[in-house]
Each structure stands twice: as C-alpha cells, then as structure tokens.
Amino acid sequence: MRNDSLRWRLLSTLGLLLTLLMLASGMSAYWNGREVADTAYDRTLLASARTIAAGLAQRDGTLSADIPYVALDTFAYDSEGRIYYQVNDIHKRLISGYENLPSPPPGTARTDDYPALATFYNGVYRGQNVRVVSLLKPVSEPGMNGIAEIRVAETDDARVGMARSLMADTLLRLGMLGAGAMLLVWFTVSGALRPLERLRSAVEERRPDDLRPLPMVEVQHELRPLVSALNHFTERLRHQFERQAQFIADAAHELRTPLAALKARVELGLRERDPLQWRHTLESVAQSTDRLTHLANQLLSLARIENGARAIAEGGAQRLDLSQLARDLGMAMAPLAYARGVSLALEADEPVWLRGEPTLLNELLSNLVDNALAHTPSGGNVVLRVLEPGILEVEDDGPGIAPEDRERVFERFYTRQPHGTGTGLGLAIVGEICRAHLAQISLHDGAERGLKVRVRFS
Image 1 (cartoon, rainbow, N blue to C red):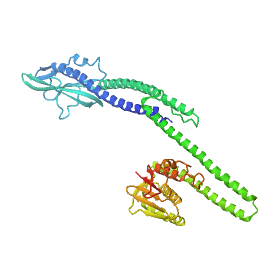
Image 2 (cartoon, rainbow, N blue to C red):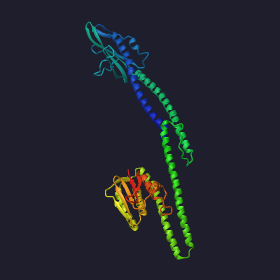
Image 3 (cartoon, rainbow, N blue to C red):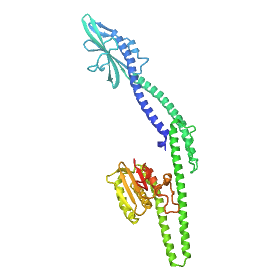
Image 4 (cartoon, rainbow, N blue to C red):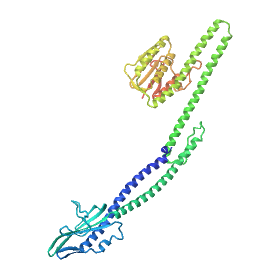
C-alpha cells in the first residue's frame, strides 16, 4: 500500500511542506506586492495632487482651481483603475471635482516619506475600494489666508493586479521548484532503495535451509548495521537449528537403545513358560519404563526451557523469593530423601529476592537436589543453602566429580556411568536454566567430600 511505502511517505511529507511553503510565500508575495504597489502609486497620487494644487488661484475674492489635464493624465498609461479628485477651499467648501470623497479617518498621521502636508489612507467610494491622498495647500493671498485641501483617489484595481501578479509569479516559480524537488527526491529515493530491492531479491531466492550471511556488496553505509544485524540473527538462528538437530539426533539415539532393550526383554519374557520368569520380566519392564518416563520428562523439560527463556527475554520474569522456593522444594523432596536414608537439610533463613521464571527455577532446584540424592549413599547428607546476594548451593556427601569432568557434565546426554541409570540430562537442564536467567553455575569440592554446586544469580 502507498501509505506503507517509504517513497510515498517521503513524497507526501515533502509535498505537504512545499504546499505550506508555497501558501506562506504566496501570501507574503501578495502583501509585499501591495506594499510595493502602494509606494509606487502613492507617489503618482501625490504628484497629481501637487499639480492640482499648483493650479489654485484667487479670482474676485474666491479661490478657484484650474485643473490641468496632465494632473490626471499620469494614470492613463499605467493604471487600470478610475481616478477621482476633489478640491476644497479654505472654508472646506467644494470648488471642483467629485463630491463626498472620503475624508481622512480620525488620527491618520501625515506621511514622512515626502516633503509635503500629505496624508494617505484607504476608503470606499461608490462601492469601490480606493486609495486616497489628502494634500493641504496653504493659501496666502490678499484678503484670503488659510489652507485648502486637495484629495485625489484611485481605485485599487491596479494595486491588486500588481500584487496578484507578483503572487502568481512567486507561486509559479515555487511550483516549478517544488516539482523539480519532487522528481529529484523520487529518483534519489528510488536509487537509494535499489540495494534494498536487491537484498530482498537475494533473500527471496534463497532456499529455506540456506542461512549464509547476506552480502555487503553495494550497500550504503546506513544500511550496513541492518545487514549486520540480519546476519547476526541468521547466525544465531543457524546455531539454534544445529542445536535442535543435534538434540533430536541425540534424543532419538538415547530413546532407541532403551526401547530396543525393552522390546527384546518383552520378547524373551513371552518365550518363557514359568510364571515366576514372567513376573521377573514384568518387574524389569516396569523399571525400564520408569527410566524411559524419566528420560521423556527431562526431554520435555528441555523444551519448556526454550519457552521460559523466551518469556524472560520478553520481560515475563517475576519477582520471587528464592528462599521460599527452596523451602517448598525441600518439603516436596523430603519423603524421597527419607526413603533413600539421606538427611536433607535446608539453610534459608532470610528472604532472597530475584527476578526469574518460577517453573524453570523449580526445575533447577528439583534437578540439583534429585542429582545430589541420587549420588549420596544411605546415611549421607544433602544441604540446600540460599545465601545473599542471590546465591544457591547444593552440597552432598557423594563421590563428587573429578575436576577434568566438571565442564563436560553440562553437556546433553553426557554421563560418567555408561551402564548406569542416569540420562545425562539433569545438569544439562540446570545449565540451560542458568543461561536463561543469566546466572553463573560452578562445581566445587564439598566441605569434607562430595560435591558442592553453586549458582550465582546476577
């Protein structure tokens, strides 16, 4: 749609600004034209009034006006309007010209532009707007002393015509300039967007599995950060796909082996005729099913971690009391610890507040405590500890982990007991949850023996 087009948005914005500029410039040109026209035509009006004043004379004790043709002929060649004049004697009586020409409004100041007793003002005469000059002419004759007044008026057609001509010329020039600017912007924006079009074509032509970086060839400096960000995102997406593909392959391998063993055990049990052997086979199948269920649950936990990490990244973290979470988990795990003959202690006296996803943090606590209980012999101790500022520790009396293996235990499906009951996902899940919360996890020797896992939340 045009409203979503960068090109049309720039053109519409520029067009609006140019239109406003043209309107403002047109109005300014009109009023400047009126000012110039008034200056030019006022001088002509005053010259006509002076010419008429020069023809005033006293005859038989009265003042008469001899109006020369040249007084009004000045307007004949350069004026489109009509000319009116009026001559009043020293007693304000009309002695020549038109009646009822508008007089100066009260308070109208005399002009300082010319050395004359002249006043310029606007008025209305016979339904037309007129510009009037009122010139005072001192009269000093034997038996007559006073001031006569000469008024010369002109309709403002010529002045308006000149102002409109200036305005039209200004608008024409600005219109041509605006059209040129619009064309220039059109071609400039089209040229600037051409690399984006090539970039779009390059992306559309790629196969769905092609996650190579986008080329930087012929890309403007301003677009390089965008292309770099897209390449960075593509690289992360490629790593994510590789991790998912590797995880699916590893999960399929881990599930295939116990399922094959389970099927073989069932088939062997079906060949037996002794009910005791059947029972032994069923018990063995039940144990294998429990291990498969545990493995499936851990795989689902890994899937939940992805959603939880996305929720945290999108601002969905909650303010939680880590001590309260540890107390609730300790109460839930106490029966399992008792059944295994292991003492489970909790050290979490003060509230420790942090922001996180409660489901993932419960999963982290559960995996750490379950792993500690699984590796602690009967009669041993497991301590769940919460410290300020945002530190979680789980310490056990088990065999511990050798320093050279402490990095690899966070890899998926890695286990130090190939023939044991572990799935190799417990600490991998813990590591993923820590990464989602931007927390640091480290393994240390216990106080006497065993292993101490420390998680430090930022």
